[in-house]
Image 1 (cartoon, rainbow, N blue to C red):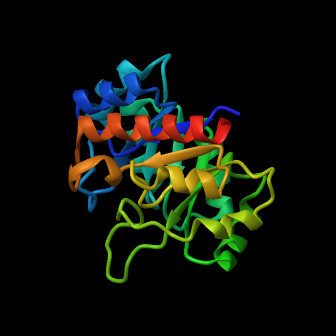
Image 2: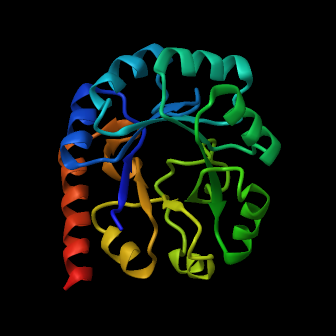
Length: 219
């Protein structure tokens, strides 16, 4: 199985080019004003042109209303929506129907019991993303650079399609992939030199670490 790799929170041409040349299957653009990775729909739309035919462009939102989503979809023309808030299964279904786009639903995880929350979304969301629970007092639901105990995912039904997120970087991705077998991985703060500032060298290093982990597991 080919591992999907999503570089999220992109804002510049250089960072997007590094993600694409590294082999990203997905590139993410964040629409959440409190995030240092926040981008305007029109700007994301200009950037995502380079990804057409190379990687799926994902619009990341947090409890966005229809008017906000209308502007994002019109301005960016994403291939997929990522819902990173407290959207209900009914809301996920409504969003999918409104835009005719697949939706990935994100969940915050600290312990195995947190995974129970996905049950009502099975058959509704097209994919799941598991992120670490944000630190106390954090304003962002994701992108906090905090990992969680990946071993809790071992109890998941192997048929569940998910991306692993939360504090991933070049130093720990090998261990993460040794412990669990996600169908995809998502990195944002782990390839930044400062909050919201993607570093081309760190992006390249992340891809190198993923390739090294793949060779090790195949040996």
